[in-house]
Image (cartoon, rainbow, N blue to C red; front, side):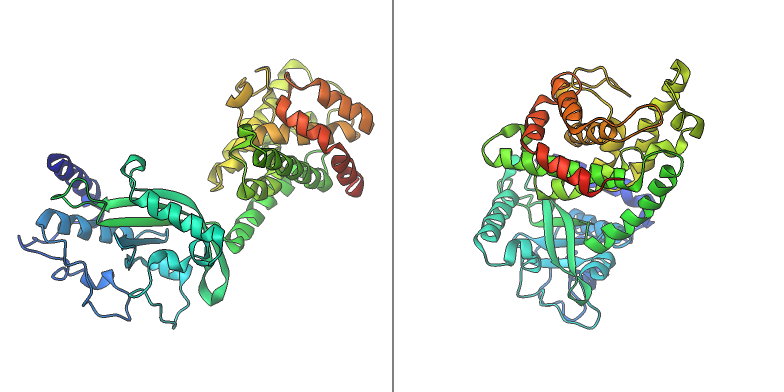
Length: 400
């Protein structure tokens, strides 16, 4: 255990040495109270009387010094807390993300989970989440780690949403069975303000792609609505014990209700002569058309939610493996892609195109039902049958 610990430290020091430069000599009896980075371990408004003075060995102290230097430069909000969950350090990005300038934050008397309403709102659900958090951070089988969505208040009391990932960074070398001495928590900001800004940036690309195609703005709105309706119905099935939809939660529903619109964003790279051809595509044209899936995945690769890329790439895959671009089958196809496949085909069939007339609602329903198990996930088609009228109503309300 001890040898592995020192090997990990050495590997870490090698990894960050280029980034942080040459480190000063560290005295044998160094504690973090003696460290030049000591003040970073407490908020500015507090003294250093309650510091991490239990870290006394040279290797561990140097390790934490390196970690602080590297993490302080990061643009992603990060905090370090101890085994009692008391915050000991946070970087500048965290201060910008969470704190209102000029306000004092009681980091000495409150533990880190108190700053997130996900764990501290006082209701039964929050109490359960808090217990799960505590259990995970003390559980060696799970790597003493935890990951999940959190909510809280940011600057000027604005609501923030983030995905929080917690992992251990320092263990007690004298007691291999003890839980970690220190943890690091990394916050991936998904607050509404951030999501809106990001979404608007990608939406401009989407609008540009629509200028080349016959699809309308109503088409992408309808696909969003259809996808959300399916996801909501599937979550109802999940609540009744259907484990096929275990991955669907409220975040999934909210995400697919926005990101489904980007399914054909890759068409921005497809020739207008192909997109607007009044007739069947020849073999060469069809091969070019199919590239919009991989092109779309490349465009959405920089979107922080992987669902965006999954939808763009996989919404033309088919349950029996005969789709494109990769011929995936069954549950190899991402769930979001399987949902959007039904939503997109429904809208495409009911919409008039240069090469076809619009299908009736009955014809569209029959077409999708017949595609269960070949084109579409049969479980999703089952749910589609149950909410058929909701689809029809949404289509009529947003008709072109």
